[in-house]
Amino acid sequence: MPALLCRFAVSVLLLTVGLHSLPRLLAQEAAPLATPAPTEETPEEQELPESVTVDSSETASDEAISERLLQILEATGWFTDVDVTVEDGVVFVEGLAESEERREWVTQLARRTEDVVAVVNRMELEAHPIWDLSPARAELYEMARTAIINLPLVLVALVLLLMTVFAVRFAYRFSRPRYEQHFKSRLLSDVAARATAGLILVIGIYFVLRISGLTRLAATILGGTGLVGIIFGFAFRDIAENFLASILISLQRPFRIDDLIEVDNVTGFVRNVTTRGTVLQTFSGNHVHISNSTIYKSRLTNYTSNPKTRDEFVIGIGYDDPIVKAQEAILAQLKRHPAVQDDPAPLVLVDNLAPSTVNLRIYVWIDTRELSLLKVRSALLRQIVAELTEAGISMPDEAREVIFPRGIDMRLHRHEPDQATPALAAAESTKQRHAEDDVDVSVAEDDLSQEKSDLDRQHAEADQPEGGATLI
Image (cartoon, rainbow, N blue to C red; front, side, top):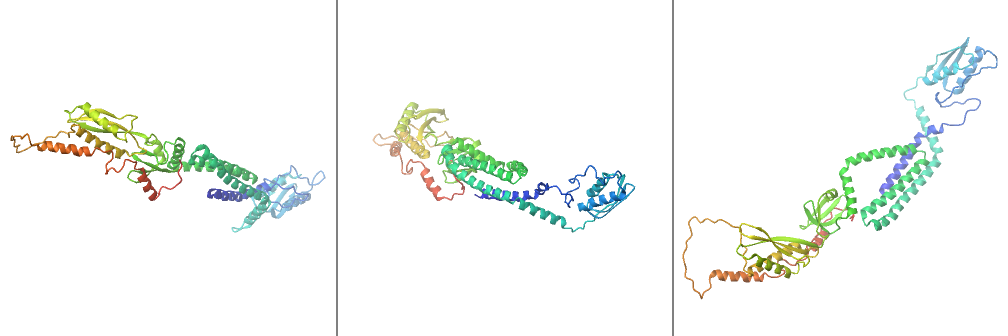
């Protein structure tokens, strides 16, 4: 797992950096013996005695005070060319000191010496060269010494870190199938498994840092990580919104794969759902990618959740035609068609009165999982037109005003009873043509099956630009 390997490298880096802060922890060593050895402690860390005794006599001589102070200053190893002179209890100190703190330390030591009246500190500060590398060498030596001392703890921490990595991988692989049985969703099971593995990882890293003595550093890093998380949360707000929307979609499951839905004015079959978005295949064969946040916040229509879908369309008849007869003829034709559901029953209702027609609105229920709504509507309209024509019910067009600038030649012609008029012959021919249209399925309509089978073949042959595993 690349993420775990990255975390492993980061943890090792933190352990290495933490070793640089340990020298102070090792400075608490055993107290010096009778003769003080040179030490690197600062004057603040080297505690001054309450008083310095020179000899057992009642009044110390100037020579004794001078010798005692000189022995102490030379024993520290902090000073160069030290000279101590005492005259009538006044101490004069000369030499070179490495810092102002150590020069002040000499003054305080002389004041606490027995029978000292005053102190005149004439020590000067040493001039350090610009390219003096001795502090760097001393620091490197101390770091190497500290690393060797803490090597056992580092090895134990590395072993524990490796055990944590294996435990995290095992927890993820073991818990994900169990969560899939409980949640029935790939996304939720994956999130729950990663949360379990992440908890084990955090506990393991805590113990690793605790063994390495980097508990405070761990708290600092966690606090910084939280701040970075907030910053990235604002920067990638849309990505986080889509991810949370995908989790909510997996919980609520408003649709499934291959369902026909309409969302954001796009109608199509659901082909894939990832953490980024949902891919729909429209009836034109195009793949449309919609973000999950848009799907979750928009109005969604699922045409597949209920197998029965109601379709409606309008037929206009003339004002001179009997409305009841037209309704009965249309209803009888609807009941004869095998694609129309009997329950709920079809309806033929008067919708409105148009300028030249009485509009009848027809409601039918169709099983859209098996049948195509467009093909069934085509077959029904074709059969209704044939049925109304057979019943002698007109279907006039909208009223139009026709102007003849030169007028119309109106002449009377004698009608022969034994000869059929052209109009009657045309009407008979029209009825016969509409009678031929009274079939459930025409050649042009192929069959009434759903177009999904054709779209499935196109989807299998098309490129899959969306990628990613399906979440539901």
